[in-house]
Length: 265
Length: 199
Image (cartoon, rainbow over all chains, first blue to last red; front, top):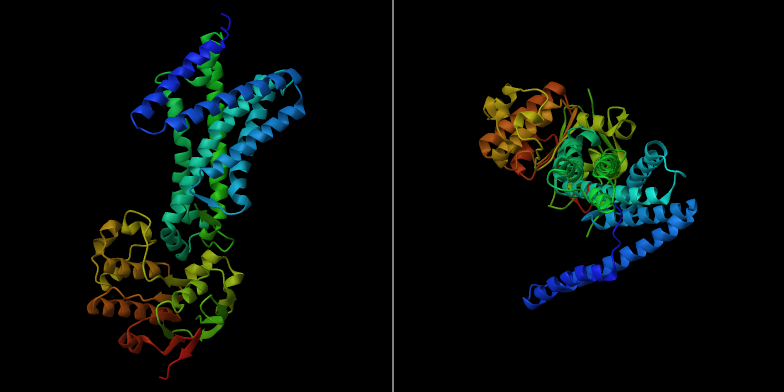
């Protein structure tokens, strides 16, 4: 099986469908036509640009270039995590908790995968490194954002309960234990659900892509399983780190609840 | 037996407070709403950033881990808060005799917190505080939501605990009758200062 290359006309047919939805929505006064068109245009520009950058990257095979792109992806993901918080930490922590957690989880797992599991030559071969990191960051980002948002929102809402526990002499980690557990659970639920549904309810995106590109389905399934486990580990380590760092920063060394370290949006 | 000493404890509402509450002594504090009574108790319990220090006998708050300090200097907030489903989950020991003296049935430990009335929560708050066996008590209007009978019961329980453990008590009360009943000394907050009232 070989890859069937898509022509501009093929893409235009798909684009016309989106245009039709927008038109229908506009005619029926349902709103969202504008957002739909903007998002569709944005995705076209972003993906074409990404295709172009990846093309350059694959040609150059240069480690500094790959490292720079990876750091750029990480910094955008860090910003996304922060932007999704209803109550975020003030100052550098607001950005730092998400970015640091993603760095330690996604980067270390990417390195492990490249150096030990897949072992491409050279180990930083962008064809493997960049898609891998993209998938890890995308999923880890969601887990961390959901976990942190859950943590800060519940800490705010249940502050009286947390203080009641501190007043009775509990340590900060005991006083926030239930909230922390719930935050971690909420961060991990999406990936647990997607593992449970994989292959039965949904055909995962990467496997679909590989099959469309001509890989044997069995090979595509193995890659998908690998990626899924890596994503789970990345999300798990990332959420653990973010929820731990976040909950620690809600208290000072005298085990006082410091909600003024959060700012409401 | 311990005494509780406040050394230049300063909050956003109060100038530095120096006060020695001897073992077994009850100092009652009153003042207008918002004058800073609760903030003073919070500072002594080391729940907010503050200047100054507090000492239990010779041991200062800043020299010991905060959780340990808070177990020794028991603080009862005006409104009690509960985190678990059942009452009993908030206690180390099931002391049926204590809750009976507060006018609650011995089965109260199996009750769900969500079904408790404000008055029941307040009385259970006292029981939960004493369950920690503190060496000093900071009480923020411990009987504000109670009728006369239960106020008397609560006062009797607190006084009995104090007599047994000889602990110093700092008690915030809005009721002049209660102040006369329980206080050894009475202070009111006036213009950011503690002013002692004549006996």
